[in-house]
Length: 185
Image (cartoon, rainbow, N blue to C red):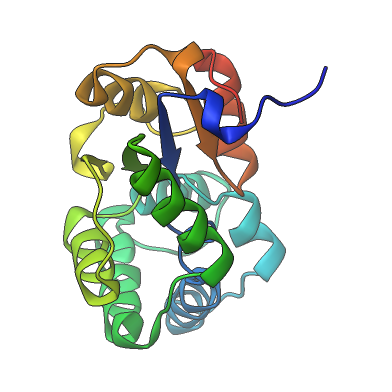
């Protein structure tokens, strides 16, 4: 089946980290530094495979697998702090940003659906001058990607149904979430 042209959709939802912004190197560095501080190491593949999941969910997974993270909430907060130090240096992907800007010019509705904290997302969007109609972040959902809740909430805020929306996503959990929610991805 061919993917319909983007103009055929009433709205687009963009994942933030690794899709709209080149932030995965900063996430990887923050995760790896937090792990080193606790006496273990993480591969970049491990982190990339969990793109779109909340930091707390990843920290809990690490704790359950026997990694010496200590308190998962404190470990996730440490990673968050290390990542925030890197925020001013993160830039959007030019080609993806151009897609978003063209969609806005066509009158399509735009949302960002991310597993990151709202403070990080708003900082990056404001720094880049990117506007959207809806923003769903980690604090807005109880079930993170690969559950479709993030994208379903975004669709609701846009006033559109999943078949009317195309999702831009780079991580396996996010692709699974889009499929589970009935979105083109």
